[in-house]
Amino acid sequence: MNQPYRLLSIYTDLILGREVNKVYVANEWGVSCRTIQRDIAHIRNYMHESEEWHILDNPVIYDHETDSYYLNNDITENRNYYFDHAIKMIMKNKND
Image (tube, rainbow, N blue to C red):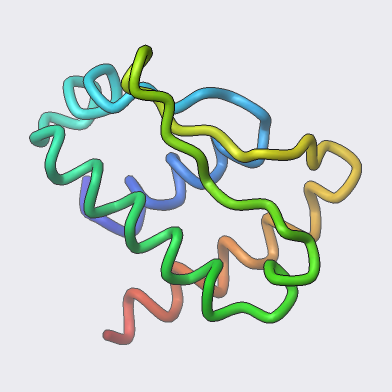
């Protein structure tokens, strides 16, 4: 599978409140850990460019002890909102 699907998978895991372990995800997708770091950077850039994310103040945090990423705040009540943003992110990435 390609980058848009991987980005959506990572983004979905974050929205669902899961920690995204860099090594595990890299192995799962058959890519390097550096590729996963770049994917997270794309997600962070998207969040930074979105005014709604600034209002929600919910950055992706990296935990050095577990090599994992997670969202700072619980967003379970607003999942549909975040999934709409995931679709926009993929469409934007597809057009770039």
